[in-house]
Amino acid sequence: MSKIIIQPGQLGPKKEKQSISISELYHENTKLQPSLPIEMIATGNYEEAEILAMARGYKKYRLSPRIKLPEIENLLPSASTFDEVVASRRSVRDFSEEELSLSELSKVLHQSYGITGEIKRPDGGTIPLRSAPSGGALYPAEIYLGIRNVSEVEPGIYHYNVPDHALELLIPGDPTERLYEVCCQQEYVKEASVVFLISGVLQRTKRKYGERGYRYVLLDVGHLGQNIYLSCTSLSLAIMTTCGFYDDEANKLLRVDGIDETTLYVAFVGKKKEAMDHPPTSFL
Ligand SMILES: Cc1cc2nc3c(=O)[nH]c(=O)nc-3n(C[C@H](O)[C@H](O)[C@H](O)COP(=O)(O)O)c2cc1C
Image (tube, rainbow, N blue to C red):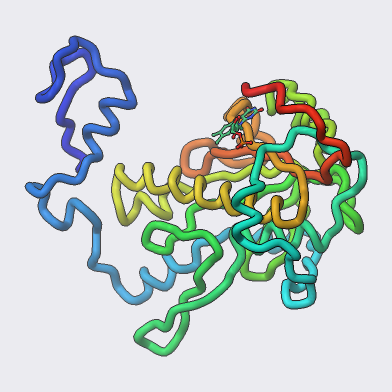
């Protein structure tokens, strides 16, 4: 998989044109081919200890102040059916000033990337499984939250600690101005209660799948993003996602290096404005 098949500017085997874009080059070089030896498709021979380490795909900020999120069993079930949720899912860009409740945030996080099951290991232990599917169950994503307006939570930048279902405070204080700059001065930052920033820890997946694993990280984050959308829809919350963010400014804010771990996805979440009588206006 690491063998370069086409060089930039060269004619590829199936190409007519003279120049090849970076994405074409990458895609071509990460295609599975029947001719590839199986060990190039996925590295499979791991020691037990390595499998265990890989199954612990999450970060914990052990020294940060933390807020335990309300347990999911204690939250009310959604009144909407799955059919209704799918049919009504929309990007909603009208946020109310009403604060989001901690229970709502807890539910969205759990339904997006929380632990929902487990599989047994041969040694009798378990490997946790999440609400989003993940290539190799490696869970490369981390969720950070710019919290502005959530009940019982001081504004700040937080990290979602998945196994403990808790928020960890990384940077105290109102994050609005920093996030406004990070998100290309989009006004939604000033209106939404929470800005979700999702990163990918690329080696969690690339270690097993090589360069092709980068594709899987993006696919994983897409699944996670759709879960956020569906969860918000079932709670009648407003959500919209954006690709409009300055990558390295986001990485700097989250204190990640932009190489091993890098910001991939941003979404704005809040209560909906009651009267949403006009169609969306921005499609940045
Ligand atoms: C990867 C991605 C990036 C998006 N970026 C933006 C954005 O920057 N601004 C915006 O208003 N909507 C953005 N959207 C929302 C799309 O405009 C929206 O999904 C599309 O118009 C379909 O509408 P719906 O989500 O209401 O069904 C984005 C959606 C995706 C999946």
